[in-house]
Amino acid sequence: MSTSVLFDAPGPRGRVRNHLITGISALALLAVLGWMVLKFNEKGQFDGKLWEPFTTETVWVDFILPGLVGTLTAAALGAVFALLFGAVFGIARLSDHRWIRIPAAWIVELFRAIPLLLLIFFIWFLSPDLFGGGDYALFAIVLGLTLYNGSVLAEVVRAGINSIPKGQSEAAYAVGLRKGGVMRLILLPQGLTVMMPAVVSQLVVLLKDTALGYFIVYVDLLNMGFKTLPSVYPGTKLVSAVVIGVIYIVMAMALSAFATWLEKRSRRSRKTTARPIEPPGAVAGLPSGRPAPDGAVV
Amino acid sequence: MDELIQYAPDLGEGFLNNIKLSLIIAVFSLIVGTILAAMRVSPTPVLRAAGTAYVNVVRNTPLTLVLAFCYLGLSDTLGLIFSTEVPLTNSFWLAVLGMSAYTAAFVCEALRSGINTVPMGQAEAARAIGLTFSQSITLVIFPQAFRAVIAPLGSVLIAMIKNTTVVAAAGYTVDVAAKMRETFDTTGVSIPIFIGIVLSFLVLILPIGWYTGWLARRLAVAR
Image (cartoon, rainbow over the protein chains, first blue to last red):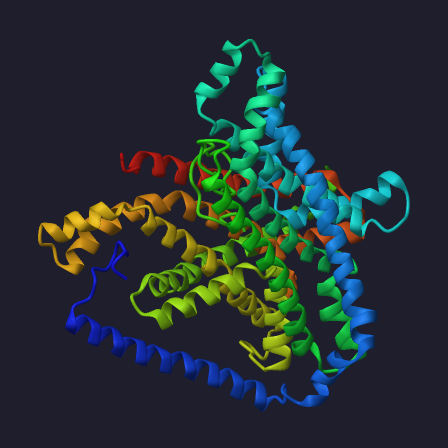
């Protein structure tokens, strides 16, 4: 670890100490794992009968796949609309006209500050009053995801465009481009490279947030795994939680890995000299461009 | 407006429960997050790997799943029970457990990225002038890292407060979101109630954002 800011390269005594700590911590971690396995075993969670349903076709075809389709539908629709919302409001916040800029800023700040579940509940209860009876679960989730994640993405878009060196737009104006042309031909193409990693990280958050459908009985992975499956196969609560947990983690990690790959690619990119922006923190009222830790938006 | 006035005491009680949860979770997640961050920057590969694995798994799991897992998995199936008499006390601590475990991963990442903002040259200079390990940590690295961590930690705190609305998944059904839902079930949707609850969250959240932002700017290390 000679590259660490905290530790110098260890000497002979340091190496011995490090080996000792490695041994002790490995034992401690093994003990924790062993204790967990013991607890699981004590309650009979390794019983083949509990895991058996997951090897049958019906469980996957009738329960898990429909749930997965529900989750992915909500995530895909939410992502498309949130990207649109984010692009429109991000650019609106950069407008030269105060009557566009200020309302856009208010909307973005407001929807970033409302807890998403409250928003989804509100839309879910309000929709039947406005549009008549029907099932509004998917609508409520997609609209809620759009408003919240769209607002966060609007900040990403704004930060991305702001991060392009000023000389770029000055040069574009100097060669005679107009406002629309500067944005469309110069700022957006460069900004896109810079903002892509942060956008994909936010899509991971969006995917995770689809699980809020659990509360409004939307047929998604979480409802299938926690409510429907255990009611059909008694006693499988924990087991099915583990299975769907793995599915969620694999999906989110794949998307996260994609974001990391994009960031590396964008760092090497010769399309722009601007550095990729960090995913924004969920703080209302902070100036943009402030580096937040990756994944600060929870 | 009448519904808001009529249900305000009940909803206010729910909101106080959210604040109570937030305070306790903030303490626990800071402690656990610091331990995790220490693991992730330690010179011991085993601890680093364990910390990284924990953070990656927890960060990529929906909070709702974590809480439901605590409630239905840990408590119902494995028999982790904090209170046998009062179910709500049990689910309160399950919610604290789940949310602390979840938030700690984000606290860890904020702290770690804070340490990473300190340039290598600072540590090298500290070693070069003969500071010991503990001196260079306490006099050079942590003071700089701490300043870089304020704003991100503020974001994590705000996200955590907003996330307390999800605790009904752990069976704690007396928080403000569950109460709002209950109220809507009885009276139908009420716009004043929604606006009232949103405003209470804004009043709680915005000052934290402003304060941590102001503090971070004021203490920022000039580089």
